[in-house]
Image (cartoon, rainbow, N blue to C red; front, top):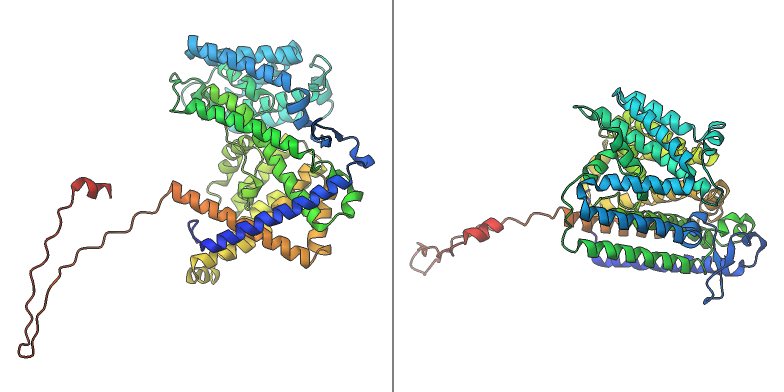
Length: 539
């Protein structure tokens, strides 16, 4: 079955209608639980007074969102605005040296926020990995980088390095781990790219330019060194038509999304409710299913907005940053699941694709996925939740390949060839439905808690069986078909079908017959129109 397999229009309209109604129905249950539990004691630490105009309390459980758009938004906006101002001045006066100005401004900003001792710590890690990269041995660069990353996850190295940070403020902890973690990943990218370079080595200055680019320094996303080096040093700073208008439009879109999410937090406490297990045990099945789904959608929105704001600034600097992550609403395969496209591209480039090859061999795929999730565990920090999350996602990724190999064998391959493309698409969507909820359950482990994931799984598969289970799976089937339809339309745009071949002209003959004659007289063929060579070539 190809990705361009189509279904009847009325069927797609039906799936969209069911999906919209089910989302509104689940949202109404979440809204009801939020309103009834607004004054619970368990809600007091995170549900706080909101906007004066609404007269309602607001969900403030996500400290990262509150930090970005409430508590420290002025500081973050001031730092990014200063970067944009200096970058614009430099692009006008000395475009060839703009990456150097980015580095100087980034180092000054880090120095101002965390002190010169922290800058010294970062420089020491950069120099260490730069020195190892001169040997041009991939495994040595990997081992050194992972050991350096582990020093920020294990005591007493964490406490010792945290002592280099000056000042005492709420963002100190986040800035320390964010800056150090992303620094190690960027330095590893530099070292691995230096190993691939045949003639000579990249300079230490190029590494510092790459690492101290302020928009990416604390919060990412990670752009691999090969892409950053080419884009930051290009001399042509011209934009496409309507380029600046599109950047401004993206910025305004992110601002609108921030306001919309903040508005929804006044009515739906989707981040606070999962922490109150007593309330969840008395909630309806639809409320639990809606909470699980909305939590994943919110995490995607948060990542898309935060990375989108940073990407807007970097696009003003003539860079092409990693795209936002793919929304959970558009996922039904483990191979496409990620919440940070920068980290995903880094892992695929240096670990997963490097070890897995074409991802067709079962053993190679298993080794590649194990190594990939091993690096991810170290990046996130080893703990029970992360280990369980990594195990299930690694299993799901490999199980997809095993299933594809199994159904590619006989007699399944012949059965699929014998059926229509629409039927094949429907059957595949049934299997993708179960895959979708596996992705949801495995990932709410990392976003919420193990207890919440267990409660959702029990209610969906055991206590709610068969009524809730069948209805939820049918709605999910409709969602998968809507996703496949969107992919089909995008495939037709990216790779349109060739036009059908022209029908060759046929010669017309006229035959006259009579009762006395048995012979036919053929009329001369009709004259063919002259074809314009330019039109024929265009076809």
